[in-house]
Amino acid sequence: MTLFKVGMLTVAYTMLLSVAMLVTAFSAVLTT
Amino acid sequence: MTAGASGASEPLATVAPEPTTASATPTPEGAAPGHRCLDCGALLTGKFCSVCGQKDGPLRQGLVDLALEFFQHPLIDTKLWKSLVPLVLRPGALTEEYLAGRRTRYVRPLKLYLTVSVTFFALLALFVPEGVMKVSVSNQDFTKGLVAGLKGQRVSDEQPVEELHLPLKSLDERFQRKVKALEAPGGETLAHAVRARASEQLPKMVFLLLPLSAVLFKLFWRERYFVEHVVFTARAG
Image (cartoon, rainbow over all chains, first blue to last red; front, top):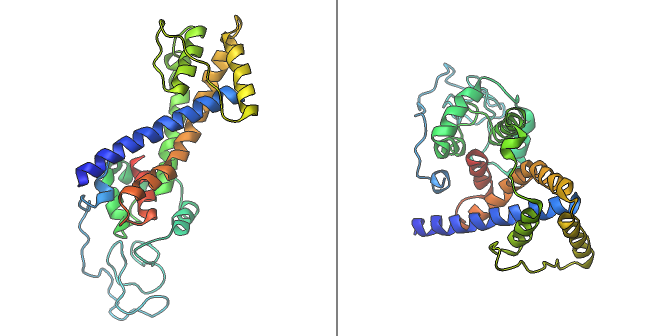
């Protein structure tokens, strides 16, 4: 169960980082 | 990464349960008789431990207490070196120590997080030349890659990238203007400015990721308090 949670957390954290990078890119383009 | 949140790590140091003060009957000024310091185990005679200086408080802290710690303790002191080694080698164990109440011997979580982050980005700006960070792509490739990345597509020469439209009309018009300016012949200056702007915003995004990561951890380990996840993400981040 813990391994499953860690796997799911890794996927979720990767998605969070992707969204953060997208927001950073959009923000950089729109505010430059 | 999950060692601290799951509670699998052992404490760094074993705290001796024996009292280190000679007073057998403590004065009941803010402390119950026989009440011991969570950090060093000494008998408390007031609101603060007379041996290590830790303030007497509940084992579980709230978010407000955690935030107030940031202002109540010195930014850099000798505890920094004592905290950095376990932070690198066993960050989960450092979190366990804090959650067990042993707080005074290490730099507080948010303060350590800020100190390390500011030092990292300062060293990055000072010693890493701009050319190392710069990605050498042409202006056309940069625009194409950016638009494709925002759409979650792979860039290939055979398949042209479709136009990306933002949901809000005002934002979309602004975005399309920027994309056209980037694709224009003299758009290399703007492309450089966009890259520089993204580099500037990266530290802010890293700081924003701290509470978001804590929310994510809370979703998976609901039996833990949110403040515990904040402490762990601050240590691990």
